[in-house]
Length: 289
Image (cartoon, rainbow, N blue to C red; front, side, top):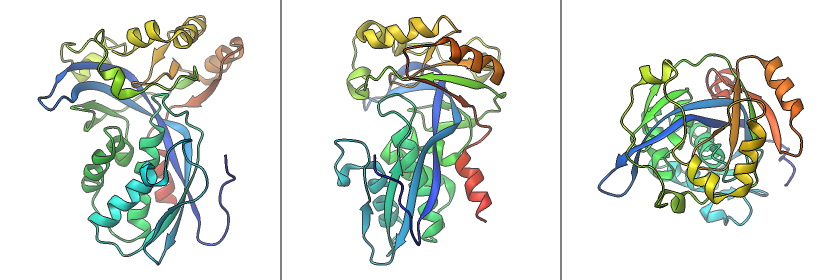
């Protein structure tokens, strides 16, 4: 990984990870996209995006991004070019990212990076698009991008873009990365994926009746590394899968409980992070006003 850029003009911005506290598939649209219900929990941990405005109109990635991703295909570059085009902006940007969120883990790293680029460049370029417009642009980049743009924990429906803010209690999470990169498109086509869960209501989640992830049984059968992590995490609590990736987590109400549980684990890539009341990006933006 390249060191973070330093020098005149650079600014650093958080791109937080997320968890899906549950995820059900309730059907499929005529265009083939699946209809979901989920709750997004934002985390006070994630990547750092570095931005520097250019006056020549060019958009350039500096240093490393996700291995194997060409600059033109990088979500950060695509996000900047999309905003530049839609807002008819003559300025450009240098973009770098310090990655902490595992790729393919279901923690939303690429989507969050793209959201941070859209939100922050909208401010730095002075394009001034309203949040709902930025969320529409984000949806064109990925279904998870709008929740990071809006910056609130949320109940999600549709393909994940219909968001209702929800207040979640403080919580700490032991996260674990099995090291498996899950191809989302192929997973959605799995014949053993449950696609007809009955629609639920927010009150069902609040009452504790909504648990589980539609992708969990599929991935546990297909990927021995994920099954092994589930077995290990089951010794400290109730493991869950996030998104359509390989990342797993266990929730705790108190930090001390989570720290003690993490200390019991060995041989796993596991770490501890707090849940966020709102996106750390929102806090960073307010601090700069």
